[in-house]
Structures are given as structure tokens and as C-alpha cells.
Length: 290
Image (cartoon, rainbow, N blue to C red; front, side, top):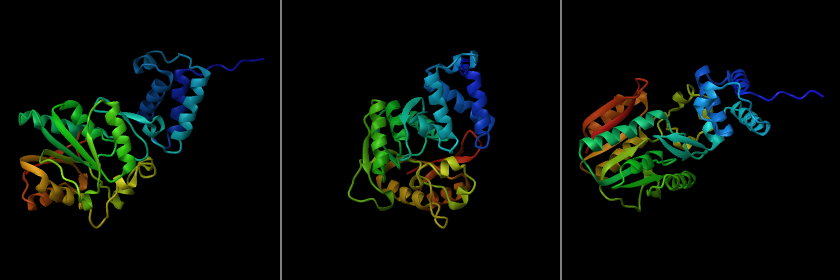
């Protein structure tokens, strides 16, 4: 009887490339394959690249095949594995929260740099629409003396955020609240208010990958076509009441509404408004002074 040959790392890369080409470009496929093999076979990415002829045990190969089957449905790899990395920290993710993006890491870096520039050693930070907690937790991890609080409308998202705070051994106060109709809670006056709120319009949706529109939480993504700045206006009003004088408001924004968001903040008397591009050259971040 002939025995079937075991799959090698090279075989897995070839199979993933063949099966995922309708969904992803070659660079994305390679990155996904590398991540899957690393997680399931417990091999470093350097070793995977250096030794493509390594054979993969049958039970591990089966798990890799099962992941591929899910990937072919469009389900994001982060949801399949149940975790991701953000700002060098591990985070649990699931369909109740958005998958953290690299441009949001840039926003966190901007906040940390701004705090350093202001020579603040302690204070209060408030994160609005926290989702997985990635912003609040990353800031707390790097600013141990600051008090960090965060709100989200979704109880499921907050459960995930609390798990992530425990995973990263930080203390963040999480509050279930809708910023569009906030009431019944008070926060300390803050040096920093930050938000990556929903900002995707229905027009934007038509240009987005199906693995986002079909799997990630719509509540955290979409806004009315006739009022795309609905969350930004509400958060700006909240910041006027809850930021200390000289405090900073940070936003991640829709690249198509940079000028409109700047004008909205000007009309609400915010000062020194700065629009910043992300690593891809798109208008994606904003800072303003109270």
C-alpha cells in the first residue's frame, strides 16, 4: 500500500495561493499563509521562510485545511484565529468588534507623542467607541500613571474589551453608553479624548472588501449617507463639555471628509486643528485643542 506524502510548508503556500487568489492579492495571501502556519504549527516566521521543505504533521495539516475553508468564505483570518496584534500587544477579536487597523496604531503613536510634547506625566484619557479596547488598552499600557476610561454601545464589544484589558494586565474603566444619547454618567475632566467612531457611508461600502462588509460589525462601521459626521459632531460637543482647557481631541476620520471635519471643529471653536495623513498618504487622523 502506498503512503500519502506529508504536506510541506511549500505545499501549503502553493495551495493557499491557488485557493485564495479570487479574494486577496499575492502579498496578502503570503502574509495570511505565514500567519496560519506560524500559529498552528508553532513555528517562527523566520523558520517558515528559511525551511520550506519542513513537513507538517497530519493533524496540523488538517487544521490548516480547515482554516483555508473558512478563509474561502471571506471570513477574516483574525476572526478565524480569534486574535490579532495591535501596537505590539495581543488582542482577542471576534465579530462583535472591528479588527484593529495599522492606521489606528499611527493614531495611538500620535497621542503618545503629543503627551510627551506637552510633558504630561499623568491625567485622564477618554476613548469613545472603544470596540476591542485596542486604543484605550494600548494607551494605558504605555501611560501607566494615566486614568483611562472608555465607552461603547455594545455589551458584547465591552466584554471583549474587558478580556483584552485582563490579557494585557491593565486597568481601564469600561462604560456601556451611546455617545449619540449619552446621559447618566460623568467622567473626570480629561486631558485627552480620542475616538475612532463609525464613519463609513453606503457609497464607501460599495468599494470595500466583502470580508469587511459581510463579517465586521455594521454598528461600528456605517453612518447615514445624509449625515456622515453624525458621530464627530456628537463627540465634539461632548469634548467641549469634558475636555480640560488646552486638552486634546483626537479622531480617526473618513479620508473623504477631512475638510468637512476640520470646518465642523472650527465652527465649534476648537483651535490648532491638524489633519494628518496615514502611511498610505490618506487624510485619516485629526488633532484639535479645546
